[in-house]
Image (tube, rainbow, N blue to C red; front, side, top):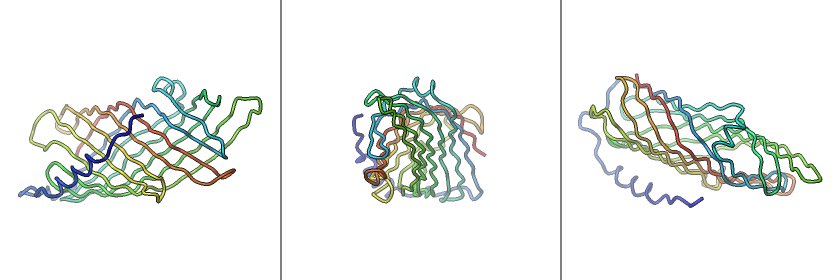
Length: 244
């Protein structure tokens, strides 16, 4: 996959950090957002266990055919210029890889928790961490028929930016969420880019459509303790956003 540069994130951070807060400020009461969503995800990259490595190239149709369970959702609570949020993803699936021939059962949980700081009516700074949980079973289909199991979990610190069109009563809105993290603490690097567009359906509910890229490059150990997950999950999203 073509590398997506992060220079745009740095430029945007420098611009919005200098923008003044709204003169009226944010409302004093708590405001809550709940967004269950679906993602037509595909996964490309490499996974490795116990010094054995294989490529993964699973399309959306591959994943749907092998999907055993999936759940995704975003929640956030804001008061004034501060807030907290979470983005939770859990999938259980099995895929086949051609080089080398292998069958992989993958359970993955990506649980992001973050704080929010309002920089301007159109921008929020985010900061927090992502808990990565990966459970892999790789069965190599050659003459040896080796089967390897591994469970790994690690924490990645994150910093990001949430941009959105101002709430001016328009039926249409757009947003862009991006973050970067890992920094060698957990993953070597992890990044995410998530643009969305949406339409207000009722006073408290809207429909959002988007496309999400989420990349993680994590590697640890050697020989029998070797584990590698260097992959990008990407695909279109659709979610219903409830605000109250």
